[in-house]
Length: 363
Image 1: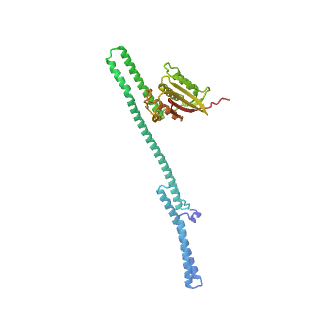
Image 2: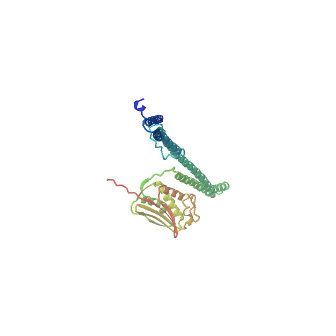
Image 3: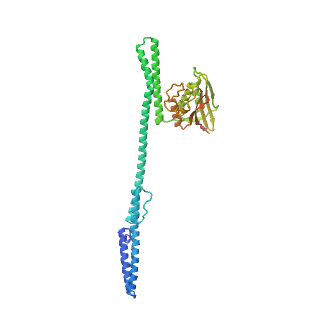
């Protein structure tokens, strides 16, 4: 052991011994001093008694500084930690066992706080996982329920015509029954495919693949296929399109689904000889698309319901699966694009907005 370590007060034991020895030395010195004074015995005793009191006070102060106060601080810190309160670490910095104990308590508090934080994060993640599992189970149940409901009609038709086909001898009726069975089978296949596609979008299984393309040219192509190049068109088509290119950054295939559903929906619901108006305008870097069909309006209380799966407006002639607008809403929401529907005086208008981008020209 080094000499400097022998004469330093680095342990509680050394500090107690130091205080006790100091008190003894002072007590002896005060006694000798008081007896050597050539004064009255009573006065000498009084002086010694004062020395004793002073020594007691000094000892009390030193013991409080070295022992009582650190123990009190350690006790307060430990009591707070027992209540999981780690906001106030122990401030003892003494170079002895109490200082080491305080440092150990602070380290333990930091470790406990970190462990509790990790436990809280793990618990939060577990809650999210449980909620995700519940949501998936609810979606599976909803999928099964919706499929069961939607399959009843085509399956009933297929069974009825299949039974009729067994006993039918007329070749023309057989051909008709077979065509109906094939059409209903294709309808079921399309329904299942569409519903699975929507479920994949909702659960994030099919991520978006954005690309840059000219939306004006893109819309002209889709509208030309669905609205212009149709021999059975019984409506007045009006359109308003920009005369210049306007580029966007979006999932082109999914945006084609959006346009297909909106245009087909408008085409199916326009009244015979009514106006079907397609509009695309640009304002402050944003393209505003709208499709209006003259015909029955949607009941006001149902305007927010049309974006849900399997919704059908009772006034609508559209006999689809009731999934088209749900797919539109899902795709536009995934791309954070604003969309909506509103009733006009004699028809319905669907709309959405998409920001444009500037193409950098090579230097």
